Image 1: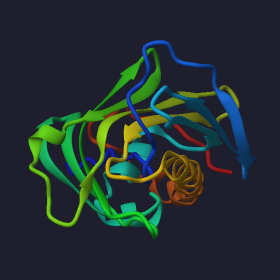
Image 2: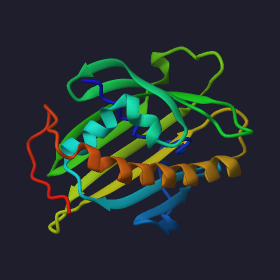
Image 3: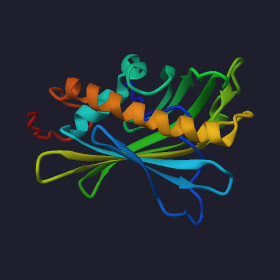
Image 4: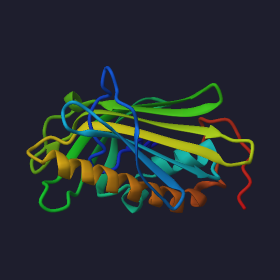
Length: 215
């Protein structure tokens, strides 16, 4: 298995959940995708992206695990691969991002774990920077905390929620980091909705079978 939970993270989806989080603020809604943001005391924002899609848990996870396809839907990803598979549902993943000018290229090392909780698929991503030394030519993204939650609905669709917060590192201004976080999340979710249908006729070996009707 080559799990790829980067998922998971669009370019610069920014810093660790605050002790006393502020309310979510509506940012934008486009193509069935809704974005909210939450400010943090360090000047950066946390992003929450939501949408509805017809997907099984297997289809979603198989998309995330397809490392070769990741650059086609996760914004600004150049390369991603598993450094270590800890268990059937746990991995250490290394991801490289191509930064838009004037930012420098970034990379991140994350630990991910997925499970089904109360009927929902939950994928949790945390910083694992200490696993790999700093790499030449890249600024390390730190403090990564993100989560994917998939909830099946009675109408046959699945509600997908993604929250993310991380420190992009370097001298990137907060306003630019926040702008990239919003645009990156929107771009990633558009790519997610385009790619998901391609993975709906396959069964993930570590997940129970589901019945999904694609209209």
